[in-house]
Length: 115
Length: 111
Image 1 (cartoon, chains in turn yellow, green):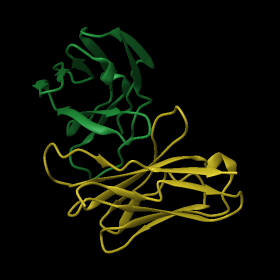
Image 2: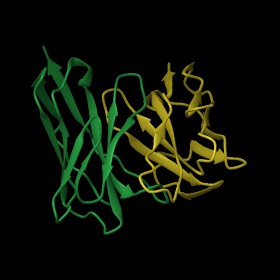
Image 3: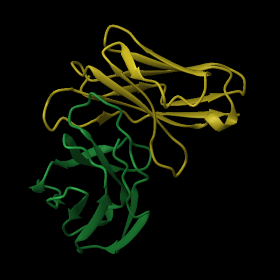
Image 4: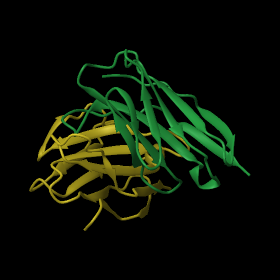
């Protein structure tokens, strides 16, 4: 596709359930980022991938959060045993490293609601 | 990692020029400055990027002083559709590191 695609666009889950959020980056973009945005707030860095490796996982809020990337393309963010404070929009962005003036390209996010 | 500070909110009127300043006192030599715009229910989108002096494109200008400890996004003749949140991001161009966004500036343009 032409842009970063995230699915689902909306997810409602019950507290305690696990959820998987998916991100399809732009083809050829080897770096991929996950951010979390709570209502009315800024973007909170979660994790980034360079290829399939995650050099920095320091932004993951707890060990209930994990992410992986396979084939240098699709990434999934998994939240186990969801809590109400996990409710937020989860944004994914990709970038083509090494290219001057290459900005982040964001998807429109997955809105997660934990009831 | 360079931390950024921006005003939380700004108000303007249609047709006026808006300048949003971002402070980034500990910017590193190789860091670029990039500005993004975010509308409700959408991901941020790229506006402009620069390293030093002035950069201009079809939608905005970016002014960066010689010490690079701040930058100013200038939006000429804003319209209602420019109402959005604007983020300043400092980091290596093209990825390769953790990119931390500041809190952003919520711009409201009034008729």
